Image 1 (cartoon, rainbow, N blue to C red):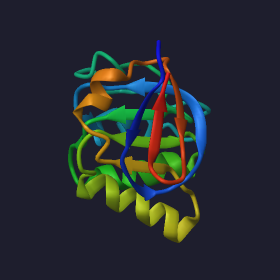
Image 2 (cartoon, rainbow, N blue to C red):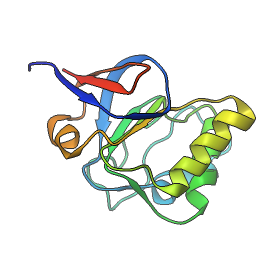
Image 3 (cartoon, helix red, strand yellow):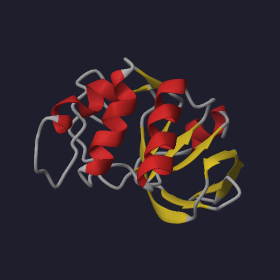
Image 4 (cartoon, rainbow, N blue to C red):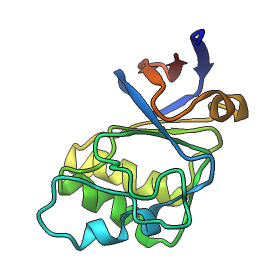
Length: 149
């Protein structure tokens, strides 16, 4: 696979290399983390959203999650902060569209108040989500550039 480069808007900038975990469907924050939030002492964060076949049951701990946007209730912001506090949160969140207010709230508050940064880039474009697949190597740069492949 030839390397493809996408330029987005760095909401919470950072530099990271890893593998993509991809949901072509919008990511349901509450549905995906509901059971994890009440698990107590856990070392993993399996996706509990049975409606998302691409992610259901996959461990999201330390993942570079690629999706279009988030959906779900306002509890989603707290879910992001909760799994982060438990040490099983994401390393990066890459959005093809605008970041939604619920994810932005949880990610930014967690970063500012608790100094737990999840690298967050939005506006990567529809082509990004079409090009990236689970397991693809990802390279994230400080300026919002994402390399796939």
